[in-house]
Length: 273
Image 1: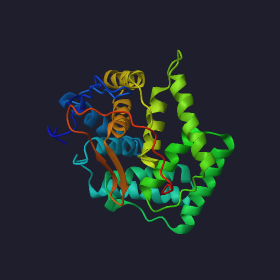
Image 2: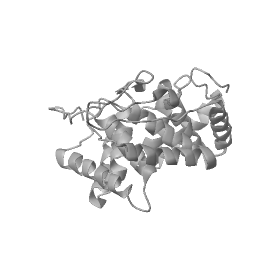
Image 3: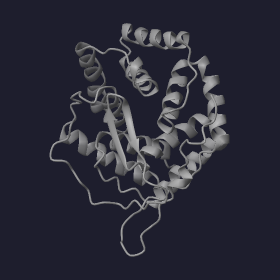
Image 4: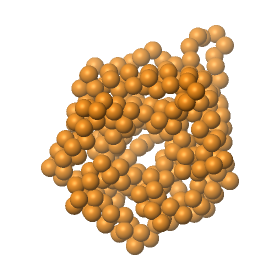
């Protein structure tokens, strides 16, 4: 895999606060440069020893650069397809939906078939379990995976569940002010909510972007898998438009140096859940 100079340069997404208009603006000044890509690609090659980790990181890198060449052979793809089939056979739906979502982002043409009966199993076995345990921080990313897998699926998100997930975002936001902030979880959760409802006002503050950037820098210095995870979630959060289609995620970034102002909350009359 070779470095593509046309890839995302987050530093170009400098977002300036308006001088006269009050409200929160998003400020994101991080550069994904040649060294970052080279080290991510090196780490990705190492992850072929563990295919689930490979697919996770490969999908994150595809979000950052949809044109990246993952350098997978037909034998590699057959291994991945065999893993997915094995997860189905063993009814390991919690792992299956994650791997299938990654495959769709990596290459939509490789997405495995999921029958209506399998969708029933996926949703019943996972959603109810998370609701009962009130693991909202884990449930929202799960719903986002399902939407990516099939944007036409009825995800079964009722208003109570939606309100609980929004409340969980506030809990994670408050945790950012403690001695043990959970910025990785916050970024993942907030990105999932944006995928589920792109019109939702997340009210992201400068403090929260600084917290997420601190984790991005941690990944840059210590663990490229953390770096790719944080960078891909932050790209979704900084996006001007996020759409889920049969091709996966379509992300439209703002023009360079364009100011993105916090808008008043806009809740659609009926969500396409």
